Length: 241
Image 1 (tube, helix red, strand yellow):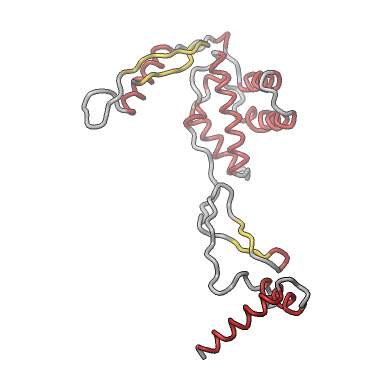
Image 2 (cartoon, helix red, strand yellow):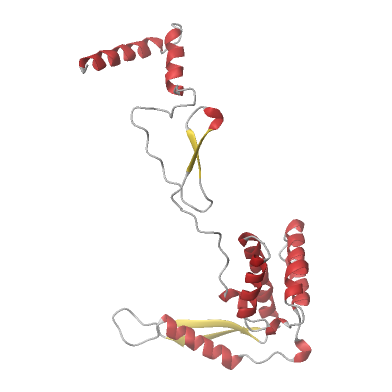
């Protein structure tokens, strides 16, 4: 069964849309049909916001910041970042419009304008996330009946090869460390054949250097086993010469 929930006039509305279509059947609602039915209900329930009750983005954003500070108990540094977003970026762009007159196309224009101004995709994405919260809070208060930010795709960084990894040696010694992009799963790298460690710039391996130091010190508990192992390896190697 499909159900729809939305806000209208400051109240939360829940309506039954219809039965869900099961695989192999021809009766019931598909997901697309359920979305159309929900939109129709929203259009029927919602009305234009009275002129006396309209608020602009500056007022809605300021009230949302009070809500985040007093109710949600967000950190002061987070509130300060949101205030900068609201004062320097959002309010100047959407000035002269009430919050219920901001549509999806206008939000998309804001995204493009900020990226052309030189802001990074992460910065613009953070601003859209804050704007999304402002509209969600405004819907609960009855200042608007839609959230145009929800239909806008977040900006992404330039495409990069997800399989590219960079190997670096820590201080020129020891096994390499792997640097990868955040959010990308790092796969285990296959071991190099015949080597326990990657060669350093000096052309020696760490494992071989440790073995030579232990073999040179007869007092080391593992010196006898390491020497016997090396002798056995040399004997086997001579067999194939």
